[in-house]
Image 1 (cartoon, helix red, strand yellow):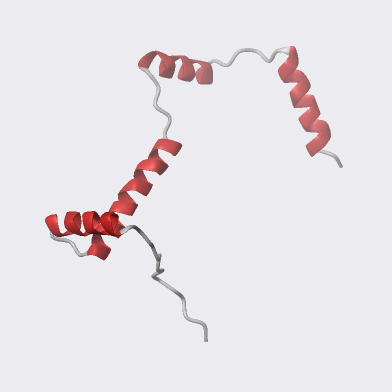
Image 2 (cartoon, rainbow, N blue to C red):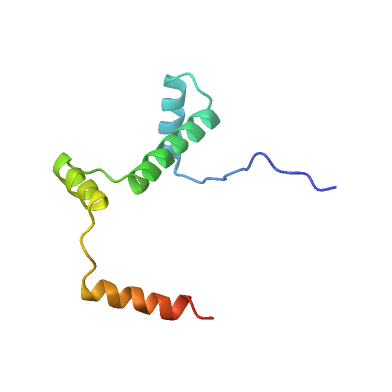
Length: 93
C-alpha cells in the first residue's frame, strides 16, 4: 500500500554567516529555526504570488476598464478577421 506524503523536506546549504543571522532572527522571535524558515519562505511566496496575480489600477483606469466591459466598442476589421480565423482554426467539423 502506498503512503501519501503530507510533508516535504527542502535541504538548504548556506554560508555560516547567513545561517547564524537566520538562527539569531529565529531566536529573537521565539521560533525554532525550522518554524522561522518555513514561515519566512511562506510569507515571501505569498507576497510574490499576490504581486503576480493581482492587477492594481488607478481609479481612472478602473473606470475606463469597467466602462469598456459594460459598453464594449463595435468590433473593428482586425477583430472581425481574428474572430474569423479562430472559427476556421478551432471550429472545424
